[in-house]
Image 1 (cartoon, helix red, strand yellow):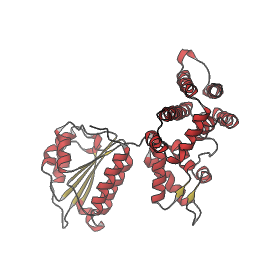
Image 2 (cartoon, one colour):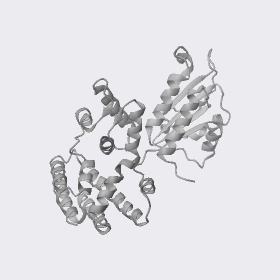
Image 3 (cartoon, rainbow, N blue to C red):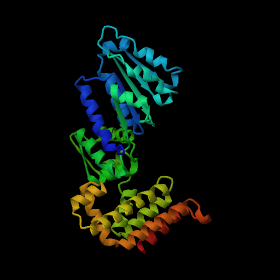
Image 4 (cartoon, helix red, strand yellow):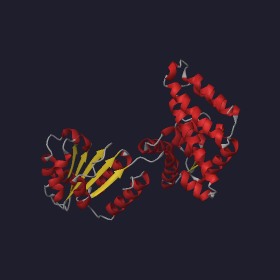
Length: 347
């Protein structure tokens, strides 16, 4: 069975949300996985849209997993009939805290059609080999919420911003994803603050907006450092490295080296794909990048021949080990970074 991906999560999320908007309800929903954003979005939609506000006090119940001493507490509540309504909604939050949740299978085998049971199972997944999981799939709906890959986050940011009626520069989106990582809830929280801070009638977001409102320097960040190294812009790269070394808590060496390793691994893959005489469309698909950034790989491949790229990757591994104290290296992270940048340019 193919591994479920972040893109699969988005497809499934949109399908479930579309059904909910069309009032097509399932008696059981299990929302599980390590990306909490989509779990929260669906559970909140159900909580605020299935029942009219005047019916919620009688027919909507929220239970927290840590408060469940016995699984019968959930099953008994789920078997209640709604009061003067077609449905009752039962949302179980933090269900991963419940011991022996699989004992709920007896209810899931024969769920009450007038109950909409929502199980939010964060940070974990229910074992797909169990009869419990198979029964949920048969009688209900499952969303497996998987984190996006690093190279998918920038595109997700651009799409989300567009859905909110705004636009963003490609470089600005890359800086955001580089700084905020793949935590979609954190990204959305920062973007929503940014939307509020923008001047009225302005819909285009640039790097300066991000610097002024989110606190990410448009000049000093790992995206700009990796770009400067790819372009062999020694002055710019050393300037950024010097700033990082003076503010190492704000720019941890482990994050910097991880970004550079990812970048040069993609450059090596790009060079390998070029040797296979693939066209740009095929290379973009294989790398999983935004087409806008293909030019950056073209520049990097001109500046670093394949043996040099391999050497850089080897250097990055060596300096990652050094930063972890391998061979009793006693150099601070700032000095390690400056030394690493120098060696990369001298490959």
